[in-house]
Each structure stands twice: as C-alpha cells, then as structure tokens.
Image (cartoon, rainbow, N blue to C red; front, side, top):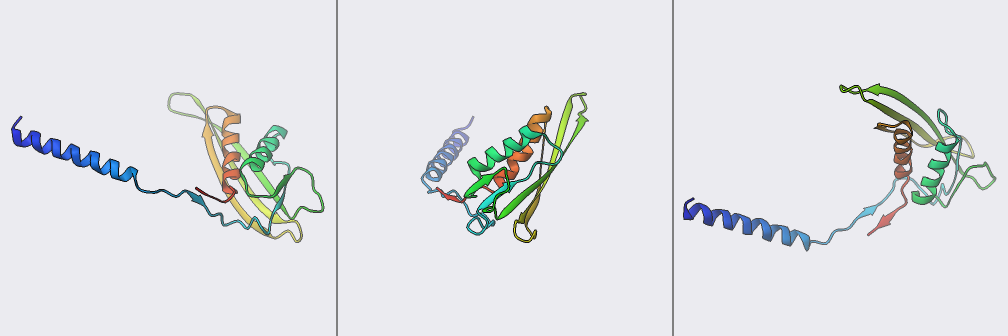
Length: 153
C-alpha cells in the first residue's frame, strides 16, 4: 500500500474514534410522557380477557401493576374503579417455509369509563412466536407497555 493510502486510513480511523468518543460525552435523556391521563383515570379494572384463559388474565394484571401508570389495577369491580380495560385476543397458527409452527397473537383492547361507558382509549397489539403462550404474552405485554408509567432519566 502507498504511504498516502496508509496515512488516509489512519486519519479516517482517528476521525471515527474521535467522533465515537465525543458522541459518548453527549448527555442523553430518556423519558416517557404518556398521552393517557393517569391522574384522571387512576383505578383500572381488568375485565376477563376474551379468547384467553385465566393465566393470561393474571399475566396482564401483573404486568400492568408492575409497569403501568395506574394508581391501582384490580381484578374485581369495586366502587372506586373509574375505568375498565377490555381485551380480546385471537391467536392463529401458521407454518413458515421450513414447516415450523409460528403463532400470531392479536390483542384488541379498549379502556372505557366506568361511569358512562365512553371509550377513553383503544388500540391493537400483536406479536408472533414459536409457542402459543409466548405469542399471547408478548401481545399482552405490549398492552402494558402502551400504559407505561411516566418517567424521566
């Protein structure tokens, strides 16, 4: 290799290293400013999930209690509940080009006011995996992440 090419490669490498080092010094702020009003809708009742079993109900409730911004997440209706989460899950079985099974889970969800039944929020979460339970839980986990509590790091 010519000296000029070697010098150019060294300078390029030095420039890349310097850029990477300087980028590492840049302050980073991670935050989540949810659009859902957790101050107004603070106590959530999770209705039994349509299309899934009791273990799926418990999985979602646990995730919401751990990650969501609600003051309380309950599994029984009570007078202090001000919003209700309804979820419908459909899991289909499919095969890839190698003949391996893949499960596709689609969870449609909506939160309604416990006072008048008006829809406060709604959406769809989907995921796929090689196992039924894994696909189902990943889709339900996406719902809990939709209601992630506010944070700033």
